[in-house]
Length: 273
Image (cartoon, rainbow, N blue to C red; front, side, top):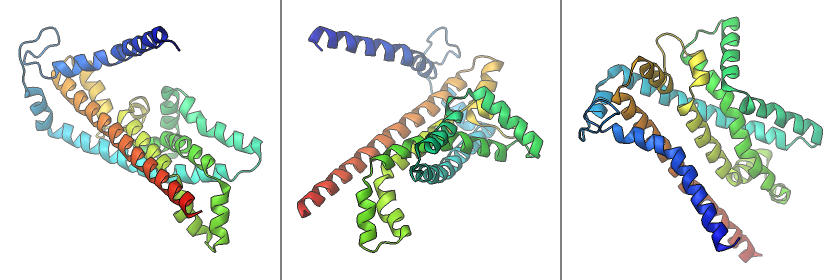
């Protein structure tokens, strides 16, 4: 690509990111507006953030959101790793492709359809809408994400590593815990953080399966926005966005550290040979 083409590509990327992030920047800027509206800047204030932290009900909803996100991410990571290992051990191509297709159904299906389906399911089997229904729903749509994050790392792993471990007398459990899991650790972390982010941001599915007396941040923000413009919504949305950014940054550094560790391990292995 010549310099002119590279310059146009960079301008295009800048324009795309500007369009994507301009509304978020606008929302964040007016979370510090003392005027109480988003139509004119009257001065800097932290009043709306103080209002958020003074709202006991909102703090309980924040706690509910993080408990759901952490629990669903941890459980879905465990199930996703098990699922990825199971798919990896399927030797025949057609059954493996069928399993991958089934895994991708919850990812490509519209959230409204998934939420309505879970609502019907929980109503039929008698699960009360609330904490349990939200947790199960978040686990269900997070497991396929974890599988997609872990499976490529399993496919990258050379079978000779497992064969060498078995030749040295390692048991099946030792192979799993000391060879396979350390190798796919970046994929596991990626799946966990992706599941955590999806759980924190999900609205459509949660809106269907949440019940009276239980809510999450996304549903609460939607409910408050319907009642009218309040800059406390801006403050709450800003805090949620910044936390998501911190998660992405944390995942980046963890992934970089894991990549450097694998590179040093590979260099050490070549030195020994």
